Image (cartoon, rainbow, N blue to C red; front, side, top):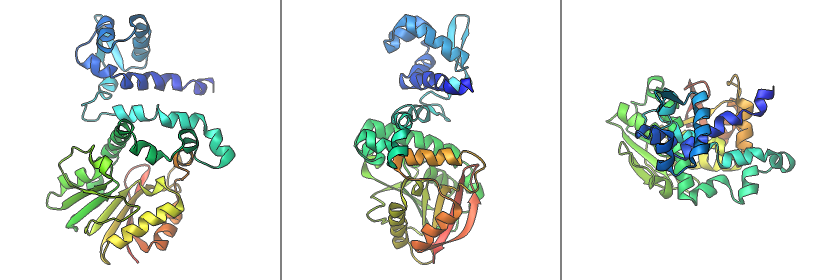
Length: 315
């Protein structure tokens, strides 16, 4: 039990190394304490102890007095094809502060994040380009890994046009576009997110899913969108999706189904409660939301150990 109390001793040094671009600095052949300290403008004596910690955590190794990256360390560099650098960073900033103050949520029933930062989470990151970039890059890293096999699970070939609504930097729609180059693929996102997107595998449409989803596609995908919002706002999003589709079109809703998750469901819901005053839902709770917004589920696919895809048509 005592080890549980200091788990953050293992995570925060790795977070700090990512934030300081230390792994990238080592990759650029800054392979001694002195070189790294000079390159990153760090205190050399403190860095010596810090490097020892990263060595014990197996993110670096020291070979013939030269500092090198292990496979774990390489995966936290900027341009690694499976980089998790921003996924590492995002949890050590505002998310961590909100979790440290979860008693606010327990006492008030309100989002601890919103009480601390005086505005809802998504408003906060939208107004800060640097924060938005870290967040969306982190979510892109998760989506890249979570959906890498989605086209082997779901056959999207029946569609002429597919739009990923609220798809961040477009990891999911990029995967679909590469598998089905003959399908017109679109990313529907807010202008400030579109601005961060460099991917050319798909077309981009600026908009806000709370206002209107104007895509003209015969299929919409919403991946981990609804879980960010309370029932009232979730219904608003789903009703706008319904208006955007014709009778024979499809909505693919990808979410965590807590009644099908063997573990972590409670922690996932607690995170949503602390951050956005929302929660992860069961299948029946999604069925209820979808029914109220004019949809019915026609098929369910398991995407990975957490996510399921609810394939829906208008009812």
